[in-house]
Amino acid sequence: MVSLPTESHESMSISSQNPMEPDEFRRQGHMMIDFLADYYKNLGSYPVRRQVEPGYLRERLPETAPNNSESIETILQDVTNDIIPGLTQWQSPNNFADFPSSGSIAGFLGEMLSTGFNAVGFNSMSSPAATELESIVVNWLGQMLALPKSFLLSTDGSSGGGGGVLQGTTEAILCTLTAARDKMLNKIGRESIGKLVVYASDQAHCALEKAAQIAGINPKNIRAVATSKATNFGLSPGSLQSAILADIESGLVPLFLCATIGTTSSMAVDPIGPLCEVAKMYGIWVHVDAAYAGSACICPEFRHFIDGVEEADSFSVNAHKWFFTTLDCCCLWVKDSISLVKVLSTIPEYMKNKATESKQTTLSRRFQSMKLWLVLRSYGIANLRTFLRSHVKMARHFQGLIGIDTRFEIVVPRTFGMVCFRLKPSAIFKQQRVESGYIETQTNETNAKLLESMNASGLTHMTHAVVGGVYMIRFSAGATLIEERHVTEAWMVVQEHTDTLLGALDGTILHEIVG
Image (cartoon, rainbow, N blue to C red):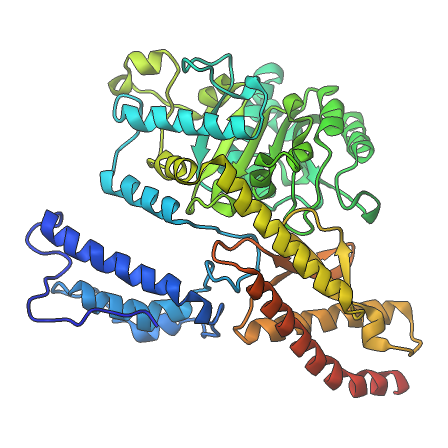
C-alpha cells in the first residue's frame, strides 16, 4: 500500500494564496515524491490489471468540481482509493504486455525539471536552451546508434541537410509521410494526391494507416504487403517490387515505404538495405520505424539490424518505450530536414528573428530534451547497454523455460526482448485424430482462454497477436523493475493456468469429437 501522511489542521490546500508559493511547493513536492516512492516500492504486490467495470470512476467521484480547495493529503488519498485501482500498472515488474514503458529516476526527474521550468519553446529565441539541448541530445543518441553523418548535425550545430527532432509518440510517421507527400506533389501537381501510394508490410503498426489518412492518402492506396513465415514475417523486397510495379501499371504513383525494425505483432525485422534498393529505383521515401527495437541497437551486437539505414530518408526510435525515458519522447532523424520544415512550419512576422531566418529552429513542443539529457548523463552508454542486455537475457530465460515444457512452442524466433509462444495443438488434442481446420481453430481459442485466465488473476499481464492465422501470446521483458525472479514467477503462472485449463478441456474436446 502507498503510505500517506496524516492530515492535520495545519495542512494547506494545494492552491494556497499563491499557486507557486516556494515553501508550500517544497512541502507538497516532498509529499508527492514520498507517495510515488512508496508506490514503486510496493508496485510488485499490486494486481497488474484490476477488473473494474466501465464507468466505475464516475460512480466514485462527484458530478461537479469542488467549490472550495482541498488539501493534497485528501487528493492523494483519493488517488490511492479511486485512481490506482483503475490503472494497468505499466511499471510493474509483472507486466509483460505490449511493449515496455520503461521509466527511470533520471527520466522522472528530467520530466520534473521540464515541467517545473514550464518553458514555452515555440521558437529558438523564446527558449534557446530548449532548442539547442534538443539538437545536442538527439545527436548524442544518433551517434550511439552509429547513424550516418547525413542524419546528424555537425559539431558546430550546422547541418548538411539532415538533423534530429523530438516528437510525441507516433508523429514521426505522420511528419515524414507529409514531407514526402508535399515533395512529390511539388513535382507532379497537387491535383495528383489521389494517385499516391504508401507501402508497408502487413505487420507494420496501425499508426501508418492513420497517418496516411490524415495526410490525405486515399485509403485504397495503402498497401499492406503480405509477409510469411519463410522470411520470419519480414517484408520481402521481391514482394514490395511486385506491388510497386502493379501500381505503376495502374497509373498510380509510389510515394512512401515504412520499414519496421521489431514489429509489434511478431518482432519481425524488415531488411532495410535491400528494401531501400528497391524503393530508390522508383523515387520512394523510406522511413525506418524502430520505435521499440531501435533502443537495443546502441549495443554493438544488435546494431546490424539497422544496417542499410544510410540509404533511408528518415529513422525513428521511441525513447519512452525501452530507453528509460518517461512518456512521451520519440526521436526522429531525417536526411532532408528542409522538406520537413517546409511542410510543417509556419513563421508569421511576429516570430521572425535571426534564428528563424537561419533555418536552424523549429516550432518546438515541450522541453522534452531535458529528460533524455538526464537519462544519458545519469546512466551513461555503458550502463544503458547493460540494462538493455539484462532484459534480453530475461527474455532468453523465459524462452528456455518454454523449451523445457513440451506442451508449448515458440511461434516466431526471439530477436530482442519479446517471446511469442503458444500451447501446441498436440497438448490440447493429444492422440485424437480430427480435421486440421478444427485443430487450428480450437488451438487458437484455447490459447486465448489461457491468456484471459492468466490476466484475470492479476499476477501477470501479457498480450496476444495473430500472425499467419496463429494466435500467440506475447511476453515482453522490459519493465525497469524486472528481475529474473519475476520471469520465473510469470512462467509458474502460465503453467498453473495451463494445468487447470487443459484439465477442464479434456472432457469437453473429447465430447465434441465423439458428438
